[in-house]
Image 1 (cartoon, rainbow, N blue to C red):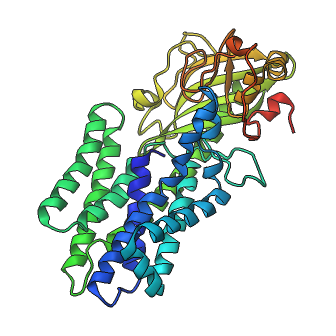
Image 2: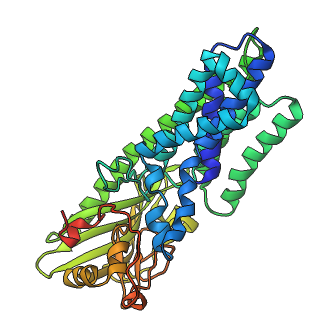
Length: 423
């Protein structure tokens, strides 16, 4: 996920933990505790991304591909990050140190907030198509959720609106709420969101704002607590809906592949979600053709409810549009209301395996690539662009053939061990 989303969720978790605990006896102590938990929530939800400083250990693009979402994005790393954050707060914040020393409630709340923030960062990153390997060093494989877009406005609204309603003063609250509404409106006009998605986001924000306002009007009510709980519930419900939609999308693609090429074996379908939209999906499939010794990449768009939103209406800036050069050519057979094929590429398994054995840079790159599109001199992971087009994962492996081998290369499992015959 992006760091804005991580920060908003972290602040929301810190505020929720604070509101859920009995208040400190003294108002000054309570204010300090609130600041501690908001600070810890925000920092804990971002600290795993400190591994970005490690990307310089290898030349681009390997440094980013192999060291980002690396060791700090593991459950073991989260444990060390909690210790680091709590230690820094203790050492650098005298008022926090005093309260942590004297208040058991604050110690418990700080530990829960820091732990939840770091684990949520890893879990949220694991929900999208990029993936994480959370169980290292016991399991070095990549795990992919394939169900949430990397920048998800549902989380902004679910946690941002309750946080805005907790701000002191009507003017700050109004400005924050206006900003939260303006961002999805702007990206909708830019073509990244469907109008139905925008309507759902604004409706959810309105319900959360009303919930916070209603609670604040009750005797002893705290503005935002009930809304934070509702926002958390809405976020979990959205993830559940996305998971169900993702399974439907995967089954639909598998059925389509089986009809097109009954002799192929479908190994993987890498699904990319659309923001605030469980109906639209882009995908890349990886299949093998044993009879010809090849592997096959197909890219396409999918709507799981074409009667409501056909694939052609899915936001083009996210997944592109059908180009007419799919597996069955430009005669229209690659298009349909529910599924639109965009591109098709085949390559020799022997070629892929030979490159992996003879080019150490390519071998390192294969520890990241889930959908390897290999050209004459470059290779690209097709999850983020059609085969043959460059993206942040593109490596000029031919130019590096005589260069010294990259070091240090993390020992992550090969996503396409099934193509390389690795076990």
